[in-house]
Length: 318
Image 1 (tube, helix red, strand yellow):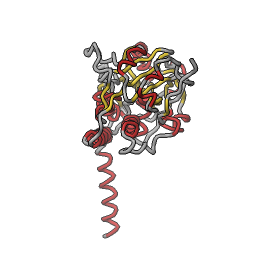
Image 2 (cartoon, helix red, strand yellow):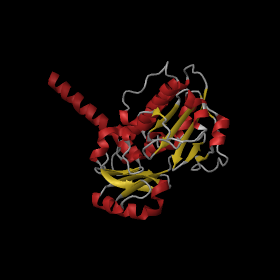
Image 3 (cartoon, helix red, strand yellow):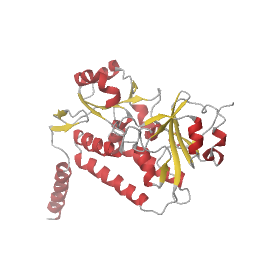
Image 4 (tube, one colour):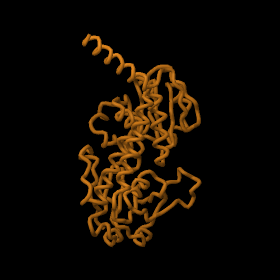
């Protein structure tokens, strides 16, 4: 009798686990408003942008191929990316390599895949997402998780992050000013309020000194060039900077006049800050920002590998 009860429990929980997931075929809508029907569970998935690989990681899976940014693999996912096929730059996917990989699903960033959407569809099932805001992140995770046959887990990932965000935002935190920059060649660009990383900063009582976009109806317009003189006028408490190329930031007399640089609170961060929409990236960004803004209250995230941790900005010689 005991063996029968044990067998029943095993079968019941196995059934419960399967019932929580999608039964194929499934139809999902991506951000092209295109309905894509997937007949069976994808076994080989390509990620054109780190988002797809990030989501697979959070679901206990692994992408077969991944694109690069500035010819570098995203470091925050650790060594697992080294076992994925390099699909070339995020804005210029190597379609020959992708074709040879023969993925049954490609998850891409719409901005960079739109000119070649027909080719992606010829290779296999294809989903493209617009990823700028937190709402974009939540929606894409729900959609892509369903395509992978794990809709319940997608919902759970969003619920878990929203709970984490709520815990941080409900804590009594000192307000600080911040500017979030990305650098193209020698030109710094500043992010506006609607970018997801800025939204996370707001939850930590950090005010974006740059503010809202001058064209709020254009969601993809998430940043704009900022002069060093304008940065000096803003003079934030904290500066967060991403630069894809190795080496120090270009020297300029203004840097040493900035409060954040003087106090050692000008940080260089890895690419998951500019692409924070996956479940792993957004959790790590939020946890590290909490530590950078409020080091006496929050520890640095242990799960963040050394290569992806924030470091103090270094500048070249004048």
